[in-house]
Structure formats: structure tokens, C-alpha cells
Image 1: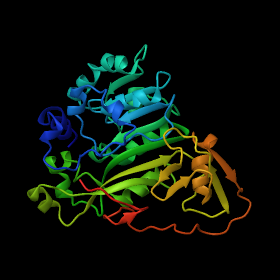
Image 2: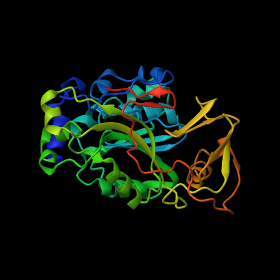
Image 3: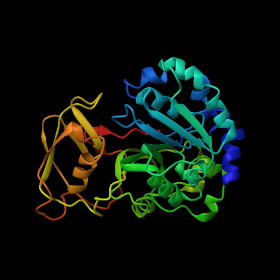
Length: 348
């Protein structure tokens, strides 16, 4: 299947118009990101097959690794956001895609006004980052955009990500998920797999894999249901439902298996760039500036022991435990179109 995927993305697909479903459809970017996207080379944009937005907050000066970088769209966006003092490394197994990315390095260096390029690309497998010489505890952030579902060994991908991340670093990535396990015969269909559908993880299997790899308490940032606008493919996969979802995983030893209540709170200072009024940690934590915001112990650590610490005041400690934090549960995490925080989920 790995060879089939490499051929699908290297030779069969020449642009996003060649996809047979809308599983890998891009999100509408926020206004602040549009000027950066407008600076990208047309060929890089044309060969893009992502399903989300992998540009978390507070990126200036960060070292970032992009898994399955393809033609380099996200690498170059992040190149602009980390600035000349930051670094972005892209990894992909598809030679044809990397050739597109490589030939536009100097173009983007000039577009962003950098004296030297802050990006590099490596050809290889995202399950084998050690074979590419990527060291332990090196990257601040690892991103990926609709690629991990294509991996034959997703558990190994997560283990390697945990290895290369610095303590306090995070994996911030978008991918396709299913509401159930996909039958094995469908997983062997190269078109269904290449379209990012039959390789999609059942969401609860993903949560357990992430925790086993060392990422306690995965946080869902945003999601939307996927409608498969291809009747033949939709019929093969029915009745499974699919979602495009963005998660953030923090490399923190302190995280507990559940959200425990220690009577803590945080106060957002309003100092994260482009988030002067509200800091968006995940789908359930949108923290207004200046407001005392109660948090569980895990959320406390996600803010206190990461690059976000300087932007918050921290109230309380771990001296007294009050039980499980209200609202902690294990239901289907995704939004089937219902209102969440006053905004309806978009649908591809």
C-alpha cells in the first residue's frame, strides 16, 4: 500500500483537481493568513492535498517539522510565520512532490525577505525519522496535514514524533477520522486509501495510540464532517461517517489520564499575536483576556509548561484534589453539524 500511495500522489495526481472525493479539501483560511498564502508559488499551491490548517499560535523563532510535506505548501507558510530565526523541515516519501518543493526554495526566500532559506526537505518515511538523522528532543512543534491516515504504521509515527519533540513541545495536525473501524478489504483498495478515507483511524483508536505513545490527554481543536461527493465511493464506505479534525498533543510527563480538578484557574494576558481578546486552546477552551478561567490540572500544564506560559497568570496549585473536572467525558468528540460555541461546523 505504501508503494500504491507513493504512485498515487507522485504520478496519478497532478493537481488537487484530480482527486476523486472531497476528503482532502482545504479550509477557508483566516484573514491574517491570506497575505502569506498569496505569496506562495502557484505550482506549490496546485499540488496541495491537505484537509486542515496547521498554523498554531506563537510560532516566531520555532523549530517545526512537517510530516508528509508534499509540495511544501505548509512548509513555506510556516517558514514565513517562524521568521528568519526559525527553522522548518519537511519530510515526504514522494520524490515528485519534493522536486516541486525544492525548486521553489529561493523563490519563497525572496518573497519572505529572508537572507537565507530557513527550510529544508528530506525524502523518507514518516515512520522512520531516525533514519533521516532527526535527533531526539529537537523540534518545538511537529505538524502534519492529512497524511498520517496514509501511513501503514500510525503507532510508530506517533512514537517518532514524541521522540523528536522537545519536552513541552506539541504535535499540531489535521487528518481524516472515522466513527468506526474500516473493514480490512476496504483498507486494501488503493483509491479509497489514496483518497484519505479507508486508512482513516477510528477516533477512539487514535486516542489510545496517542496516549500509548506518550501524549496524555489529546485535545481536539476543530472538526467538520466530510461529505463524500462521489456516490460510488460513498456507497462502498457506508455507513461509516468521516470527519476532518485538527488535534494538538503535548509532550508533557505531568498529564493525567483524565481531567482532574485542583481548583485552579488561569488569566489570559491577551498577548499572543493575532489573539488579543481570546486564546483558542481547543474546542472547549476559548479563554477570554482578563477573565479568571477555571481549568483542570492537565490544561494548567498545557499552558504553564509550554511556550504559552508567558501569556498567562496562574491561580492555585496542586495541593488539593476536588475530583474529576466537570465536563470530562468519552463520547464521540466530533461535531455532526450542531452548534459549538456559537458557530456551526463547516461541511466540505
